[in-house]
Image (cartoon, rainbow, N blue to C red; front, side, top):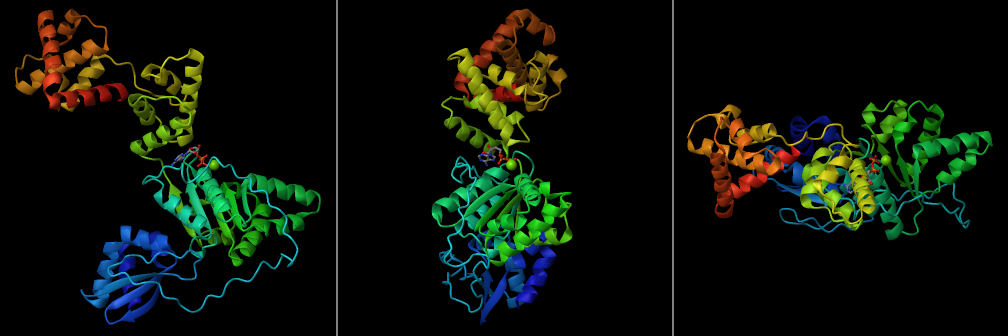
Length: 458
Ligand code: ADP
Ligand code: MG
């Protein structure tokens, strides 16, 4: 039955997702029309329910008819006693036979204290201060699952990949910090691939490579940052391959980060295929709202107050790299310190941003205002200077005049000229009308708020 389901599913999801989310599922029971499947970890269940519920339903209906039901069971061989998921009619986890606990590390002699492993962790990076969004939820949840249950074979290894500055190191460190707190007896080690290579090179020089490798084999949780640095390093790849195998055989957790998907990583095939045994999760650039949340959370710890409009301006322009977001913030703090207690405003933000992004919005000119308003009201720009008296054109024209007066230092006379040669009393009247409308008409007030935002940040 399950094989039938899988066939249907295979037709409906892409191969990578199939491999990740469906291949590890085992059917465990079928009673009348109820199929029970076992998933390796709670995250699987949640992810399936959230993303693949329709596919699952369709496949089940085809295999068991419309009254078919599905039960999940989480592999009971996990240390984490996951609460019974509340499925359609929540059945608790039974136990299944099989799966012997892994043998102890053959390299540790019983009774001999293991060498102390320095963790190299930076305690500033935690799950608590990692802001979650669509851009990172799979990676974040998978990392948390590993941290809750290190050695969890479904995610071993876990590979977090993504471009520079998107939080890979942060998540990797968070796994380590979390495990160090929750399981203090576990030896956690964070190492960058470069550091590992350097250690290896110097051990070769001093003929101590065996010691180095034995020492690494004592680690319970190995966190390897930036494995793209394995490329073109044949010797490091070989040693790492053996180390990886020993660790994994002993159910030790391995989490790695990479600046590209593993498939694109130019390393030995045997290593690449092993890296794909577990789970690969990517980080992408957060959407504007998530960027705002990240900036706000970082700003909290700096004791500076960033007005919302400034925060939005900054986040709007920083579009590729969260580290830059922090850079801008640090610069603002610095400037503020230099200037005394001048508050942080758009002008200062603009100055600072110039060092980070090449193109920030040009000065606000009458032209920018006219185009923005025309776009907003879905008019051609020329209409604003025309003699049309159609109501919404008149309104758009009045609003444009008002904004030009607010944002530029044009005189009433000059404004009249740019709006089709109207005289200055007409301009004055228009400005007053808009001001009145703002007091009395919520819709206009809202429109103006939005227009001002667009004019400022593009
Ligand atoms: P990478 O290793 O991918 O180059 P980092 O982990 O060094 O990136 O992240 C760069 C900076 O951005 C770090 O200071 C990190 O704390 C911050 N950062 C990235 N993503 C988030 C997030 N979702 N929440 C909070 N901070 C984040
Ligand atoms: Mg990094």
